[in-house]
Amino acid sequence: MCTDRRDFLRLSAGIAGATLLGSSIGYAHTESLEPQQSSQAEPIRRLSRMTENVVPITLDERKARIEKAQQLMREQRVDAIYIEPGSSMFYYTGMRWGTSERMFAVVIPARGEIAWVCPKFEEERARELIKMGTDIRTWEEDESPYKRVAEILKDRGVRTGTIGIEERVRFFLYDGIRLAAPALKFVNATPITAGCRMFKSPAELALMQIANDITIVAYKATRDSMKEGMTQGEFAGNCAAAFRALGTSGGIFVSFGKYTAFPHGSSTPQRLKEGDVVLMDGGCSVDGYQSDITRTFVFGKATDRQREIWDLERKAQDAGFAAAKVGAPCEAVDAAARKVIVDAGFGPDYKVPGLPHRTGHGIGLDGHEWTNFVRGNKTPIQPGMCFSDEPTVVIYGEFGIRLEDCLYITPDGPKFFTRQSESIDEPF
Image 1: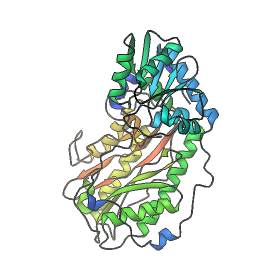
Image 2 (image 1 turned 135 degrees about the vertical axis):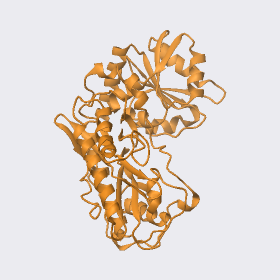
Image 3 (image 1 turned 90 degrees about the horizontal axis):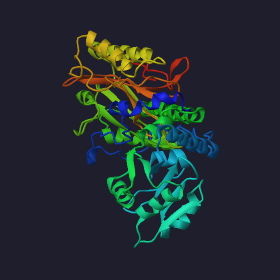
């Protein structure tokens, strides 16, 4: 659902505060913290599948996405874009393929049919999986795949001109194409790919809604399975089991006690004890579309201090949501949420105790994608965009509180996919 094309021309400037991060979020890991198998708790055994009514993205919608990308290319004088396997390839074509040192790619020209580049020995498997486009250029092990890309471009009438390279393309592939087609100019394809992917269609929103619904159910069952002395791995293992029981794959990281102040977790092994703050953050995928939810609560009875900071965090999340108005710059959301925390005596800016990171990020096929609620990002908020709203109050040595719900922008303003936590005692 791409909207005003003029806004896409501002994407390159805005991408500095809006870079696609995918799922490489950098949460703390140690071997001891990996999800652990345990006897399945009763709240998880009671779960049943929630994916029977999933409606995948149709081939017609994917074709419309390619047409939209071609329109953007023509407007921005880009002659073709080059994409290797990943979220953007899946977005446009429905193709899932692993990456290796062997080139497998799709070229989408501004005019004409898309074309594929495939190792010859993989051709039959590729033909089974390719859902659109009949132009498949193969290369033997002793041949250059880069020449195949140059041939595709030449056959589409592109002998000189501008080629967009999707941002996840590995350097050696770009470099090989550049050497095989020295007359071409190469640019970042993000204004094309983000110019489509940032704006979700009703079908995409429906898939994201299911992912969010499943995540809340999984989280609640995981919380109801808590017990004194359990490890982070046991807690995360219960959550992974809950996602499987609900019909999808997903996971979380979790922190207990003072380690909840580490925004993405600590490498220190922890065991749950009475009075600990518990922070769980993660989600699942439904037909490729992601959820990302954080819930923070207390195992046992909350102290007045825990309750005070939790309530402050909820006010900051509410302020961010209220500022997410159509036409407002993305940075306004961060400013509104941050002001609540700073006015309470924390910070200022990114200093801790306080809010040390941006207030939210884009989400869709990747857990983190364009664009961000962060200072300096002037990108206007528009219908179809999806974001997390997740200010955090970090107090090292005590605990941290983060509440994260994702929202989507309608013509009338923001709407959450999920019901917010009502209190520290009622997180679901």
